Length: 156
Image 1 (tube, one colour):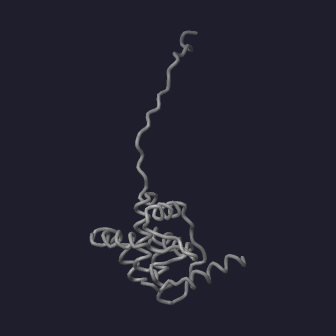
Image 2 (cartoon, one colour; image 1 turned 180 degrees about the vertical axis):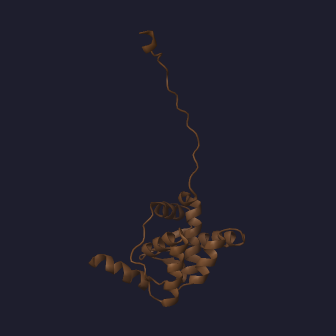
Image 3 (cartoon, one colour; image 1 turned 30 degrees about the horizontal axis):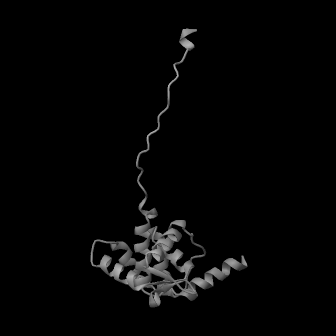
């Protein structure tokens, strides 16, 4: 029976730091958000669905290409896109920091946000792929294009 006697051992757990994916870091998302508003939005304003569309597209090259094609064709061929909770958190932080302000139709970059993103843009190594993509699209993904797709969701 001695072989079946097991000494009681205490389990110990140690908290270890775990890396946070870049996609989930609020400052990273805030910078992306401000870039979209600064480079690809008229008057530095955008609706929430449009911001989620850009956030969704920035995650994969094939999605970026779809938006580039839509901007050239002036018709959005994306039937649906994801709504990311990390973006919602970043928006809340950006508002709390005075970088963004809510409007009746969405969000607008605040003066502090404009100055912040101007500082980020001075570093040529910061967000290089996002810059190229957003400049290529310009302001050609309009609120009306996004709204037309969203109306299709309501009827489905």
